[in-house]
Length: 356
Ligand SMILES: Nc1nc2c(ncn2[C@@H]2O[C@H](COP(=O)(O)OP(=O)(O)OP(=O)(O)O)[C@@H](O)[C@H]2O)c(=O)[nH]1
Ligand SMILES: [Mg+2]
Ligand SMILES: [Zn+2]
Image (cartoon, rainbow, N blue to C red; front, side):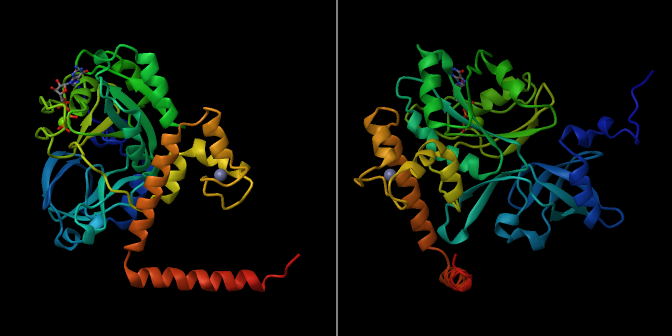
């Protein structure tokens, strides 16, 4: 018997392999015109994208109206409507990994869309510092997807248990794995966390072993370029595009180019998520507006003195918060004025409420 694709069985259709489901189908049908096709972006370039359609992968130009649309420009992982041979629109994103664009006037850049998991890759080795994970974890929490820490190059580490517990201390709420993608160690266990049909994105600095891991998880089928990178992170970046690949277990993974510095955007809540251990202490401080500096009865300082919380972690928390505040201050003054006016209206209404 020859294999047949039955049009009534959605699971046998190629698009299902790319994570297509009923809720995206609904979004598509809400705006589709006759002849439109749904597709998922597997690789995004400036003016054209590789798009997986029901009939296979095609190269499709981005509709002109979307070219200058900033963060709603199509990105890898997006579900799109293809109309008359071009990308006509981007379906609402479920999650988005966002960073401040390198160009300060440009706002946000969406690194990946519609992912269920964000793998934060950090290579082990002598100069490994768990603190480096904190910023990427804020970006991961902000995406609305589930963060997973992946310590790579575990073969270069003598005490993996110690590395895992250091990483857990800076990643409350996230699971932590240690892998050696080059030798395949630990990759099966990580794959179990990535359910078939779900999508993950992997972020981390250049040379972390992201593409090597993506290749290993794909059973060698992804064929992504990997390369020797100088350990000081000054080498060339091997991966230059963001690419969605299918893994051996049916999950999907977006490989990304290494990032050196990643700017935060709208991350106040995400900082709270990434530092949930610290924020959980704050309600126990004597003063509601405690800055956790030298106030009496500060639960955070007490935890530091008791050796339960690393003082460096409080310093990172402050640094990221200050960065976020500076960003907000740089915001469009009209937007800021509008927000302030709204706040004044809101507080007036509160004052009008009867006091008990
Ligand atoms: N020792 C060791 N080296 C590894 C491992 N995984 C990857 N590497 C090496 O690390 C180097 C960088 O790997 P890549 O997979 O290209 O790293 P990347 O994170 O994709 O880098 P960019 O694409 O530049 O962001 C290569 O020389 C790999 O062979 C591992 O498990 N152990
Ligand atoms: Mg790479
Ligand atoms: Zn305090």
